Length: 162
Image 1 (cartoon, rainbow, N blue to C red):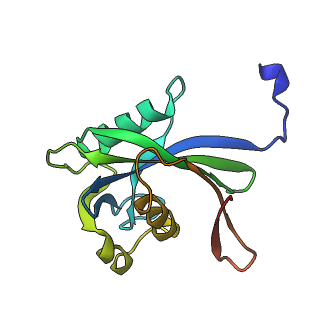
Image 2 (image 1 turned 90 degrees about the vertical axis):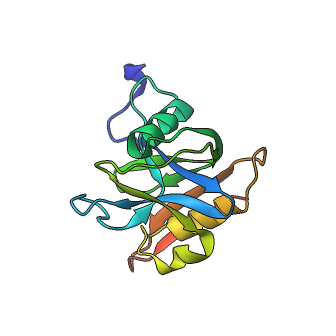
């Protein structure tokens, strides 16, 4: 397999992001103040897919590690994030809250936020677009496909296929 990989070919780092649902509220995590990227900003729960993991197992692990919660997760879609020489393959998942109290972790503090309050928060740049799409979906809907990039003026774009 390694002989098929060529230097200079575009590569992707797999990551997950989870938006747990409780009626019309979503579990978001406020990043800890000492995070290198997006400190004190709200985002979905998630992280890297470790070697040997599938996406659903990775998402379940990240959810447990960052919040202490369990959920029945499902894939909403994928986003290729153009991050320069190496991109990010972002797997977007949702699920219903199975109960229990979320706890803070080194990543930040999870909070249940009513959807209509999300716009009032300091969020990572693409959160509102992605969460809006996830909110409109139901389990069993076909997953979306999208790409995300910054234009030369620094404006973020998220484009959904189809």
